[in-house]
Image (cartoon, rainbow, N blue to C red):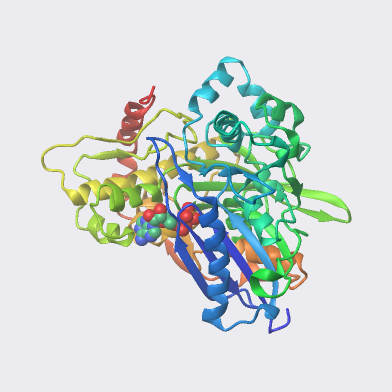
Length: 502
Ligand code: ADP
């Protein structure tokens, strides 16, 4: 890459929106971040304001250029990575969303899913999309939004409606309302894409009552997504990669060969294992999904993955801060947990939005059990961190049951992986080393690598991955016996929290 060139990654997560500028060596030169407002209109519901996401994206791009002094003409390409499944409808003539975006954690369509199960649709959906029928995915959310529009704004002309996940919404705005597209990694999370064909499945669109013209064009994750509207930074810049956030992190970690895996600790935890060019099915309720795609000599090349999704992990830390107000900041959980030797018998079930892999219980809710008079704030905080690690252990166990070679090392990233107590407890609970990279923003890094490679600014993926530095390796230690011994009690607690919100 020309030394003067940079790649701009836009990482639009659940907690906040970030723009990160990477230099020719793949190093971070600057970033800008803004936390995103979370709207909880009813228990189990969660919404984001799409206009806030777009305005924050725009201002964070401008801000990162101001703070680094990099000129727009020095940016070779833009890559986009986003929270997945979160979706919205908007009017293409006004550019206005028709309702807030429904966030991936939102459970409002649990009843709709239950009816689909009763109709016997679950197996067919799983066969076509690789996904377990759950309110997590976009299909039922888009159906809900359309019903809402029809009921509340019957005058709306359906011909003018566009649908999309956050990448599609932001891309449409970045390109001056020109490109209505998504990539295969995001499309594979909607429950509307046929995994084998990599196209929208007409029979599924019909099942959910979604008009095909709502849907964006699906393009390869690394390729042409149009150019940045000149209005935004003064010049057109090619947009050359879109990834779902978890798939972007997998790419950044260099997990491009079957069996390579990583776990991201953000709002939720997502453990993803590369399965290569072969579509693999799980026997243990893991999801089959697209890792990324690219076009080689006119042929679509897909990499697939198996995934364990745990919905509320870092979100529970935010809840300790904002809901319970037990802590002032997320990092405070580390010294608090280290003040005590154990949780004094307390267990936490992090099911604030139901349970994902391997339970898939939309009606599970969060719970503390085992509380006695001696349980203090430190024990409660520690029980929340331990529960995050135990959820990941359940998914590792499911992956081990699915595969031939047991997982022997876990690569991690994401906001909550900064927590040393959590990482050590994770290594103890799993009995394998946990490896944390120096740059925790693997998500943004993956989008930058993808965009720079697709734009031809870089040509050596292996080199980019190789130069990533390891910050610390947590080896299983003295705490292993206790951490592994308490796991079965934690699983008993999980059983109690299931099927709560019936
Ligand atoms: P996302 O991409 O899902 O928005 P991030 O990777 O940005 O998530 O991580 C943010 C999450 O990490 C928040 O939920 C926050 O509570 C959690 N977090 C950040 N720092 C820490 C910490 N030191 N200890 C525990 N959790 C943390």
